[in-house]
Image 1 (cartoon, rainbow, N blue to C red):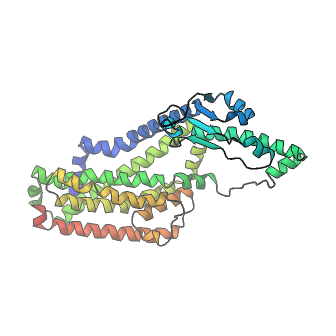
Image 2 (cartoon, rainbow, N blue to C red):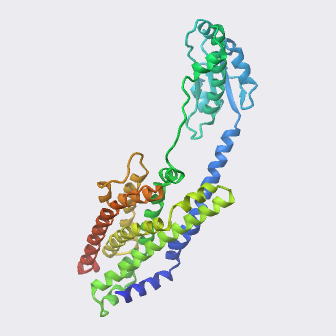
Image 3 (cartoon, helix red, strand yellow):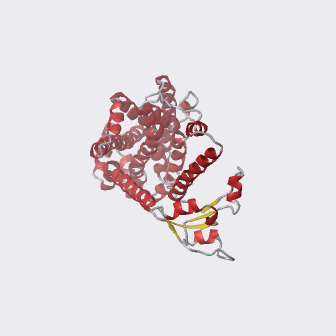
Length: 400
């Protein structure tokens, strides 16, 4: 078994494709990709912040103070468009002729003087995730509303102090009992398993294809079966090799994430990131690695069984493609709000590990749940491995 394991591992490490997925992808590619995404995202947010919004104000003469405030604001530029027939407000915004249309109630003056609520309409395209247009116009409108409230209170003969009490009769002081680590874990703790667990699958997938379908395609499976090594030892050796590559991918990813987080924290003076990572002890990082071990074993045995069944490299790839969907859905559980680790979830493979990693990063894990987690994932891994051994002993599968 160990001879098979060492032999297969050496051959895999000679393969440039395997080295790319095990080392280059988690160590370099992912940080670069995330960095580019963050750069483009920040540039888009900055452009949205600096964007001058083209607007049309309908019935602006009923609120001259607001019209003047809007006209002289640096973030807004008035354009002249006539809306009639096919050229409606919605079509003008869709055709990028204007960004914002504010339609005031024609009877606003009379309504305000008689203490009645006035209906104003704001038209804009809200598909932009940064929502710059909506945010800017709401800020400006709130300033004008505050002025109207002050005028109303002055007309009623109320003092400025009474106006402030009316606006905010109760002042709420929020005291968050969650520390920085718990808040960080709640916000990003579900995202970390979303990276680690699929990477374990990826790290196991390509070696599994090569050690099963690849052997068939190269015609070396017959030679391997003629050696004085039992089929059980052959399967276990290949299984351990695939599990090792999956764990290597996870370990390098964890090291890369911690390293790059420290580097980013130091370069951009984000000390909170470094402090939070320091708060996660080495024992917690060790537990994360241990939690990924039975998951990697499940992936290794399942993928090896699929690879043994496939008659070619391409066929194995086609079978393994949909498997990623069955992995992603349980991992997404950890990212859903309101779901936390309990006994029931600790029995669900993959989802239990994702939730446990999240709780470890938060520092709120109940360590007693680790027992059912390791038990359930271990049993599932053992069943998968036994099926793989059974599959490898069937001549109809090996030589199909």
